[in-house]
Length: 403
Image (cartoon, rainbow, N blue to C red; front, side):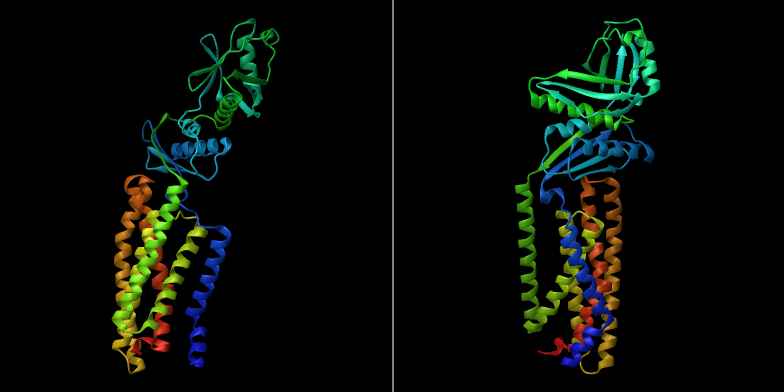
């Protein structure tokens, strides 16, 4: 027995599995598993552009939105394109309503004297942190040299006239032109000011303006077409339900195996193979930062279920070929022919679903992309890593033949 154990552990497939399981455990413990909104709670904002755009314009839109949310202080945010006319914003943790406001605005800044536009967002070089005094606020920012000169020329001789500053065509403030500025001397340091009903409202308004000024304007008009939220409590319930479902599935599989083979000891290698497969899937997800949501969990269960089916095929073939060693080897080859054919069929069925899901984003059928990707990942890991090790175990110890 000791010689068999030593021979089994020295097999390159077993060594590879042990190394990968250890690496997966390390990745999971250090990087953590990135959970989807339906598990950890959060908000999903669906944004629609006014018209379909090309890839370059879409990249600009997602970049501006991502920058806005990071400036605004939103944590764990993901912004991604969904087709050529929609953007999906995922935010971990339930966020205040201001977040939906900040991502849905074009961010167009204009300063006008009379009906003449004298400044735009393109003239802004830098934006300073807001200054809050009671319920009053101000956002200092710096103009480019050309912008300051253009503004000075427009303001020459117009002391006392208002400079109407608009953000997304909404009048924010209208300070009067000072006598110093009316001389035509360029001034690069200017500010937007205002007052709210409370200090808290002043802080929110100032932060919103600072964010829009810093991030620039969106190249197309956008509108929010949907905002959905999942509370952390509901996400916890989803996670607990998934764990219970997994445990019940393992128990059911164990009972079926015991009834079929009348050998309780056979449950252990199948259980450990399944556990190793689960760790490898989660480890890969941790490394590539793949979201584990309900769809992904369903994919994991599907992959593991396929793995158990394959292990039963291997066990049956070895049991049928009991006696001569060469006969068992041929039986295992026959088993893997069936396993590879089944895996190829499953992957072929999942790839179109994954493609459609990734192209559609996180809405509608796009939700199934996680299911398809995780299923394919689990099947590949099982076929090339875990199931050969299980076959080697059955072949070495001939557990299936011990009735």
